[in-house]
Length: 538
Ligand SMILES: Nc1nc2c(c(=O)[nH]1)N[C@H]1C(S)=C(S)[C@@H](COP(=O)(O)O)O[C@H]1N2
Ligand SMILES: [Mo]
Image 1 (cartoon, rainbow, N blue to C red):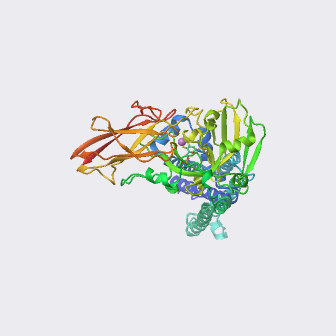
Image 2 (tube, rainbow, N blue to C red; image 1 turned 90 degrees about the vertical axis):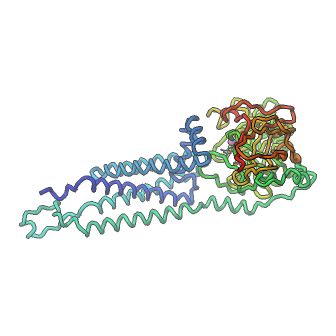
Image 3 (cartoon, rainbow, N blue to C red; image 1 turned 180 degrees about the vertical axis):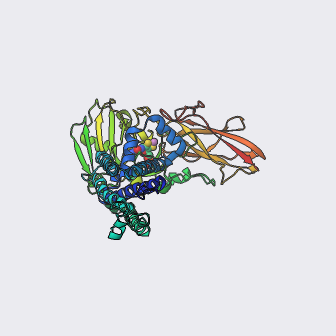
């Protein structure tokens, strides 16, 4: 007869893996719950993920992830971290069935990694390691309890049993029965229920988030006096909008505005406690509050923002009317030194960006923006304050959740520069075909071809299309709002015939430069080549 204490390994292993998963699940859930007070970014998975993004992602991997998953790359990373943690938890759980020290050590190690990582993040509060500590305490209690519950209870021996040859610590087969199973079910069920409740409440939002949202709701937007308005206003923008079904609106609604940043959890900033520091090569260092900036003369300006990693024909471009103050007005108060060649900006989450002062101070409407399309800056787009510089890609200019501006030289490198991207990022003259598309297909007969073209701060002079390798045909341009925005175009002379067709587009900017046909990747300074679509006319 096999001794009753040595249960067959599979069951043993399954129980161990289950205990490991449950303990770590409780760890993560309790940590998430405590992060309600310490900020979302201090929750272990987000903290570890953020650290990974900022420090351990080689350019090729970032590039691969972007190409493979697009803007879902963050979700993929978070799921990946969950999977890795779960696998380790299960493996350590199996080991811990025989050597409980492994389980204890595993939980302590996870807490140490998560705690130090959270504490090391740029926007860490003083208590950023608290979620990990609380999670570890809960997980250790659960782990010990589950382990105890999983072990069969030593038999209380009767004299009869003793006489029958049983010995303490060696329970007979029938004692590893329903009582023990019930005990384990109750223990694991309680742990699971606690994890679900803590996790669900913890995922519902944070105190910081609520404070940020409340200060945003209370922010309102200044009424901009026409004389201070840098944008020409509604009369002109009306002609900037063509009425072609399927063409994106001239102003991108905030909810549809593309979003790109490295933040796994959006910085949640209370405008009432926020401040902007301006320092470096200036006469007078400044610290400005949100109220200080809101009290300055407001400007409105229309700027089309685009991302350097937008592929030819891609969606990472949007247009908005920004409200804010002119950067030059703010910098004039600080007094920028002649030899300061770079405006280096930092966000609350430690992201950095550098723009040449020769660009931001050349008279264009570079601004500190707090309004977007008539509402306070949405939190994902940088509330309470961001930079917007017409003519530069976002990665070298458009710092969201801005907290710091340093006037310095070109020696300092912004976030993306050591990761393989160019230090200078002027927007390239580009064009895109939006119509026809799957919802607005080409039809036999007169069928419009339409899209957008952009060359921020230079302006678009001409757009041409070529059908089936034919000659370049000039499109009709919508009215120009300002040179800092994209410009809609339509070619309405195409008599489509049944069958397959290929359409290409190219733009010419107001400097006379014709968009290049040379195909270039997005790295290091923006994609080039003609956008080409194939259509089937049924
Ligand atoms: N703090 C912060 N600001 C940032 C970024 C970032 O990762 N972090 N990304 C930049 C990039 S690459 C772009 S293209 C724009 C995008 O701005 P949007 O998300 O409002 O469209 O923000 C810029 N500002
Ligand atoms: Mo970008």
